[in-house]
Length: 556
Image (cartoon, rainbow, N blue to C red; front, side, top):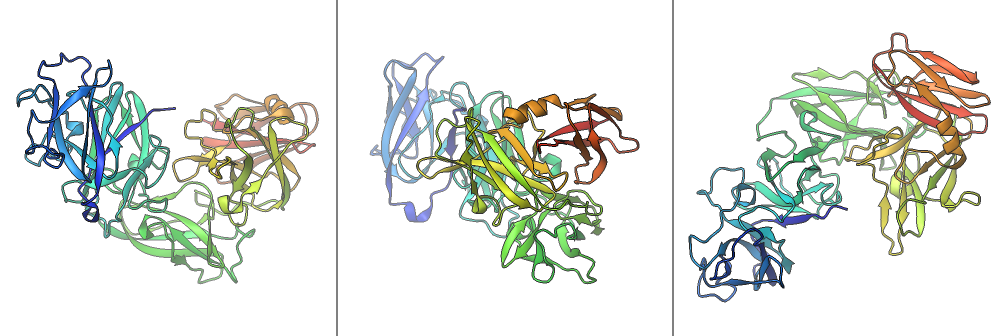
């Protein structure tokens, strides 16, 4: 597991000015010849800590921690924001040169060339031991995130960042307006030569996160390749670079609801959309004026793109369409072709099979070391996802496997995950951010992935996989391994070999439409893609016992 250090910097929040906290400063003197006059720190906190005045290079000495190269001092001072420098000695001229990534004016090019370190104190804290004259602890790089909130109509008291460097936890890693100019910042210490995926939030919870423009997004997130100390920004919230005021245009989106008959009744339900336009809170409703089941709305939005997801509103409760966010790129007034609810590309809704029973199995043998319950969550439950979690039971025949059967699943394509609960009631979902096998995955729209399954027919099926893996397990593993698809990638002619018995083979495009199907397949079938466009296709193979395997094939 990555060891991450974070340093947040900010202006003093008014009501907390009276509170006293303990703050430990640390510096790593590795590679330095320590002065006979000792290691000191000078800053604007010294008077509050009991010194005669601030910025006294000889007043506050650090002491060596054991026999290590780290020197430290602890002070009790009011909560607030402070600036400081370390000195290898006790006089000006002995002070360190602070790298740009650790300076309060990082990325801004002003503040009178301020080259001091900064820290925000809001409770007892021990700072990471940065290298003397360095930006980060040994073996790490400093990433200074500089965020411009100047174009936001309102700024939440909590401006935060969530990413893989801090467990994708919204609201826990805050940025602060250090200079009172709507520029917010945070310094993260991450391993050098690492990749950092993240996004900003104008708030402390999912739903307040920015829509990262597709031009600079990787799986709907921002991404940095960390080769050394980095200043990222100033970057505008929900833009790729510095803030600019874009032109606005009318964009009309159309959503075909005819394929959502499983959970949509036009007589009682409605359709809205959520996105950065309305803070992901929804409330902007689409209408179907001619009764053709295609719902539309026109909004005035800034170019160059509009991000949203459609939702079914049933009894006041939203059901989000599955998959990633929908992104419309435009440079003028735009009528977006209709697309099916839950399908990313335009076109008519694919036909759906009748409802069927599906057995879900997850092998926890190599999963989390400690858990007391295993759950299935997905977009096909009511309510969706965590609110409709279904507890699995231990298999009587397969050690380590937990299973459940959900009867009469209606949607043709479903998204789902497994989730555990520990003895304290804490729930942890599967995460696939670092997955190498993505054959069963699709983007969730929040930076991670969900499992997906395309029902080929109305017959009972069994879906089996290990925790956080797309492989199959047990008997299903043997079945999945015995299906051979080659060549992959394919130039148009693809061979699909199956084990003994009769099999149903269906091939889908990524919209869920069947592009080819074969019944009673024995031994092998050859798929000729013909004039189909290049891209990723999903091959679904099921046998007479209800076992199924889903694999992706790339058509060149």
